[in-house]
Structures are given as structure tokens and as C-alpha cells.
Image (tube, rainbow, N blue to C red; front, side, top):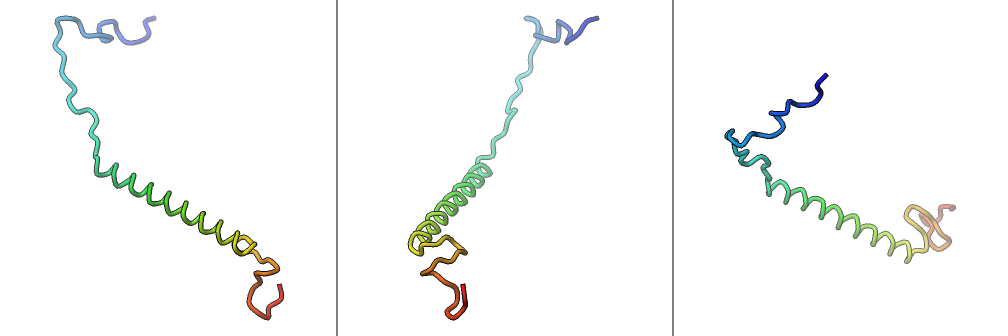
Length: 79
């Protein structure tokens, strides 16, 4: 039993003509730039929001949506 491609299909012979493939892969630089712009914008936005949240937590002594002794809810509402 013969498995695999025939021996003549593995490599072209010295006398057989070959066709150039030309542009096999086309790269759309505009799409790549747009995608990278979105990634960078999202990353910068998430980083700045995390930094602002961390600074607010440090200033208030409580994390977001938490209450501390100094940071209560509405005046007159029990904690």
C-alpha cells in the first residue's frame, strides 16, 4: 500500500515550468491601523479608569460602592 503523495508531486522536475504565486497574502494596512487604534484607545481608557478608581479609593478610604466610617450614604440614612 502506497501512502502519501506520489513521488513526482513532491517536487517539480528540473524541466517542468513553475508558475509564480504572485501576491498570495494581501495586507490591508488601513484595517490593521484601525484595529490597532481601537486596541490602544481601549487599553489607555481602561488604564486611566483603573488609576482614577485607585486614587479615589485611597482618598476615600473605601473601595467603589463600599462605605467606610467617613464615607457614608445619604445624610440621615443609616449605614
